[in-house]
Image (cartoon, rainbow, N blue to C red; front, side, top):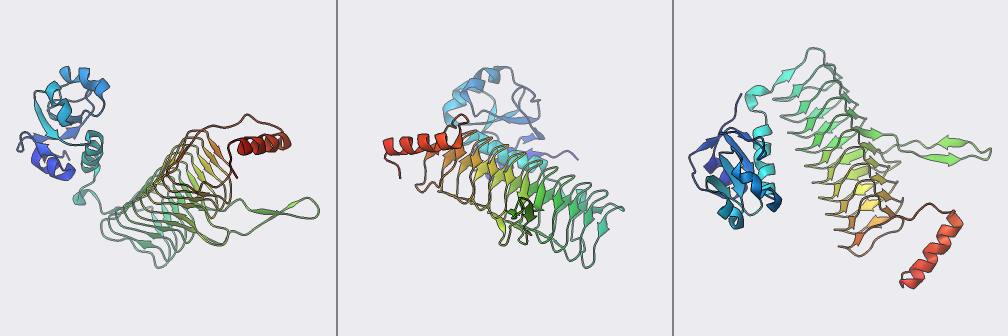
Length: 330
């Protein structure tokens, strides 16, 4: 079903001002692909030359860039943020498009779908699970026992969620994510072998969290692994047992977090970054892509960049000590 919005409605959502409140648009597009019923956006000055050739009906635009555009617009402070909010509107399913449970879905004991749940083929949901309203669950999803999923959460195809996991409202888990898998815990035995340490904790995911495709979040060894509200995680990220990721932290692809690491609020973790176990990262820390962090960061708001080439560990320790002495670090 095609969605259509008045510019006045969209302006209210993004806190903007529409040049023509009553005209309508039915899709959001890039400047290149826009048509005569599209709304698009200009957030980067390098795209200004594209305004001349675009067919977009309406543009989300800043005041300083209005001189480059002569047709209808919605004036906003941050066009990119406004684009994200409007794209969400166009992407949402209406009430009449939900409430579908495929006949192949299996529910465990004491588990029932709630109002407007949309659950696709061959998904399995365990015993004693709590499903909120307006949940979407894709095909081939596996959900263990005693799992709770908050309303308006979307779980894409081929996700697995182990026993006792708790997921808040308005979350999105993309295809192939693994939540609550066993943490990597082994104790060395006298004969040189390794004894598996039972992982008895779980994973708690707060509200408004996004978890990318094929990301793995391990359960806690004893206590829980915790992902706090507003966290956004890219694809192929690994978060080990007992980690805690602070509110509104964003993590790019292929970053890895060793066990019992605590990440503060509002941090930005670049792709391929590596975080050592049992350390704490202060609020608002920025870690550049591929950077390795081996010690706690106590002062908030700093940025860290770089990784040493591989060295013999004893040589690396000597180098690190000399560097820290030179920089006056303790």
